[in-house]
Length: 250
Image (spheres, helix red, strand yellow):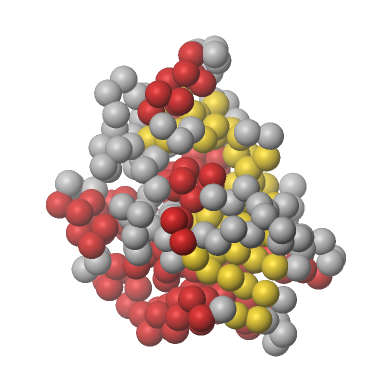
């Protein structure tokens, strides 16, 4: 089984000819964490949009009584949006039963880069085990034969938290399979994860993106993003929206 890793979304290779692929889009701080939180708290779906204008246009076609617009630019909520990109905002009393149109700086770009894949899911630390279990199920049934871990990154470049999450996924899969084919980027992320796994949160708080969020008073978002397996579901993108698949596959 082959695992490829892209360390930032612009580095995703042209893999349109790859067959039976699973793409895991990773944006730990904060899009994937917020989407997992929203779906786990009862949101009907999350509709991704690349640009602010796209999000406003899509929301304009929906019933605003059951639709919210969420997301960020440069870590801040855009003017006129209902929600930002903090998982703290996506509580059940706000999002239950709602469709959320979301645009973020990096995560939605990573999703757009995964068009080649047969199955497109979102992964982060809060749903890590659920993602690993889904990948293993797809492999065991013969439905999928390769995995592409797409780190969204920050400002089109490397983000330590996304690389560590990719490494955690790779390390978990390696515990169950002895026949993995790992690219150098995958091996590097696994080594980084093993290096920092016993002090992950304290280390992340020293990294670039986390320091920026903490300076904005958003330290709780960083801590929430490292609450391992607190949201046991897999957000799956299909038919233009992201919906929840439980850890059991339902």
